[in-house]
Length: 297
Image (cartoon, rainbow, N blue to C red; front, side, top):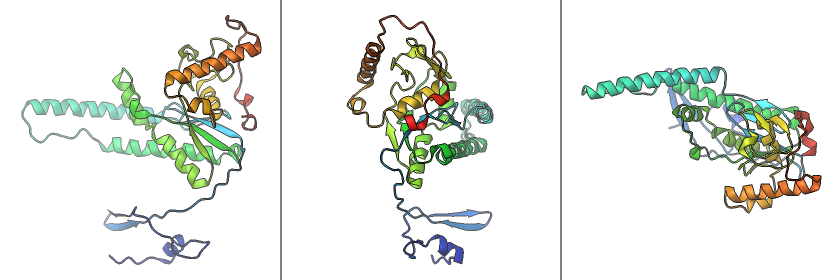
């Protein structure tokens, strides 16, 4: 099918360095919207790495309450508030459709209504858009200029909760899309972003390395049971992730049990260095977000 391109189309498809037409890839789409045909063309572009060797590392913790939390103490995006309310309404609508479908099936109706909805598809696109905006804000933040990022490797497919509502909430948040968007943004901008092991990053204390589930009394709070360190849970996890870049000892671990053993060994070394016995410290220490600047990580 011959396609006639306008002048601005030719400019967009021309490489400014070589002044030649870019080589298109196989991702070509032809759609019809409101009676008009739209052709979407894409091309591959090589982006040079702009991150200098030895640049300070900023850790990125991925979550639902906060899509992106950095070790500089900033939060970007959230699935709570309006997105969560829209998810609840959409889930209630799907459940009503499922009940109607079951009743019609018992009566022998062959053509059953679908449980999908346009509002659900729109919510999915809106959630992905909010994730993209949050990641873009993180990369374009002036405080993150000239740094490299470390983000967690997530296995969302293996995440399961006992309650069905929590599983539906997890799927609606599109948590697995965030690391993909971070990797795509880093390649687009020429910024180095390294995926690191995320096991026990939310339970490990960033001060004494003590790792225990009791360090997380709730979703937002981190309180170490040994040294008394208190901080936002996502912030504490992002600091741990920033320190795992190039950690060969953790990379050599084959399972979570070995990873926790290494972390507890580091905790014992911290206790010997601080001269702390088996009893936990009485004093409680709390650090704000400014305690770990990007230049010191």
